[in-house]
Length: 130
Image (cartoon, rainbow, N blue to C red; front, side, top):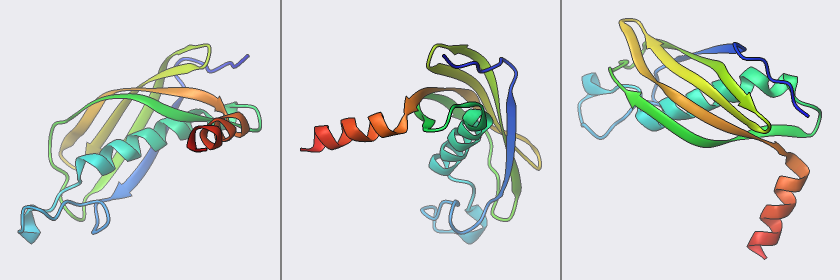
């Protein structure tokens, strides 16, 4: 039903700023890209890698994240996110995701997304909340 080629890649760049940097260490010079924002950006990069390959009315939702945050990207740094399709089985798509900063790898891991019909997905959620 869906053809998602292995090797499809996508990249985005992001600047570490006030919206995605941690604050809890209490020192302005210790502000770095927060892990939740890193993971969210990895997910969106993966989603954007294949969304144009899907029929109208379909999109993907994240179902698994296995990521390590291995180094810091300081406030003001530009980071580059990459996602590459490793495998696609029916409606499941598996990716290699990475985040690179000015001094090398910031985060890396794998991610899985599930292809959904948006209308049916929304209808199931409405039913669940009733």
